[in-house]
Amino acid sequence: MPNTYFRDFRVLVTGASGGIGSALVKQLLRQGARIGVHYHKNKPDFDELISNTKLGSKENICFLKADLRKLKEVERLFRRFIDWAGGIDGLVNSAGDVHIRKHFFEVGEMDIDADLALNLKAPFWLSRLAIKNMEKNGIKGSIVNISSIAAKFGGSPQTLFYGLSKSALELMTFSLGRYCCAPLGIRINALRLGVFDTPFHQRHPKDLKERIQMIPAKRMGRPQEAVWWIMFLLDKRSTYMNGQTVSLTGGE
Ligand SMILES: NC(=O)c1ccc[n+]([C@@H]2O[C@H](COP(=O)([O-])OP(=O)(O)OC[C@H]3O[C@@H](n4cnc5c(N)ncnc54)[C@H](OP(=O)(O)O)[C@@H]3O)[C@@H](O)[C@H]2O)c1
Image (cartoon, rainbow, N blue to C red):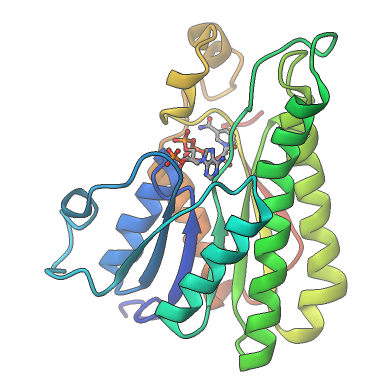
């Protein structure tokens, strides 16, 4: 039986210009979702997003630009999404980055703040806005936070606060799931990714070959493999799953 759950499903995807986010948007579009496509510096190409769908018009997509390190822009992004969609059924917090690779002996206050603002605070503000809106409208929606294997390994001496923010994101997911979402029938879960083949690694060049050899599967994950799990966590068939972190790491 075809899954029609995502037909007209109103979902906000942050970081939809990135490798994981854009692969997710394409899959959701194929299933008839209505998507807030967030980006920061790189506006996604509409024709590329719809290339494998029957969609001909822009009616299922709303492009939303925001620097998520700034609370005012986060709030404006959410308002614009609700004005367009009328409500929210799903939120995927995929925007994330290492602000700057600096040894922990060298990082300054601004560097730490930037990592926490994008990778922890923005998903928190957006989750809270989404939960309040779902509660107001009686929607039993789903939120997915994209975490990282850095939460397990502590990042590296150069990415300590990225790792710390993802670790805190997983704790936040558990806490919101347990104390806030579950009583409302809303779900929030996290997907912890290992090394995935996206532009993330072009921006942060390191010895990727050596890093891949450390992965038991001996390869990077493919964005489509992450999409499958995000869709599962959004889907009502995972209704009993709340506050959890799923690891998708090739065995790490
Ligand atoms: N790829 C991996 O190996 C890996 C591993 C573990 C976890 N993750 C996590 O997976 C998620 C998706 O990453 P990806 O691999 O798809 O990375 P990506 O291709 O580099 O995409 C990163 C996304 O974050 C957005 N972004 C960056 N700075 C922003 C800011 N200040 N405000 C708003 N948006 C901002 C980017 O927007 P613009 O491009 O428009 O500027 C882009 O859409 C992230 O949370 C990342 O931490 C990735």
